[in-house]
Image 1 (tube, rainbow, N blue to C red):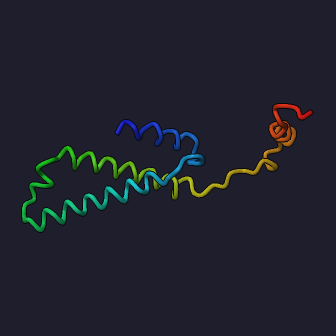
Image 2 (cartoon, helix red, strand yellow):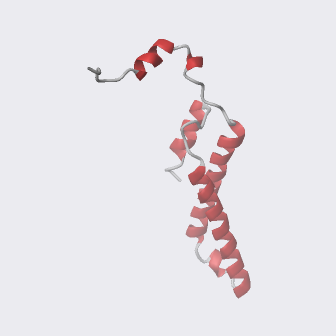
Length: 108
């Protein structure tokens, strides 16, 4: 849980998720949902629900992970939306941009 909070806060503070890949959270969310579905199916087929209630720490950690994945997905696709990065020409820093493109070593 503690590993997710700094990223949630950074996204909130910047009001953006630019430069941060959502792919890992999408894969983690789909894997977590499928894992929980497998746990439910296995328990129902065995008619023994101790697979779910027998290990509350495992179920709790997976639920926390799914909640944070939902927060990240909401931040990326709903709250801050698909924001396009400004092009270098729109920034008004044309001279600085040109200096950044100059080679470090002069050609002879």
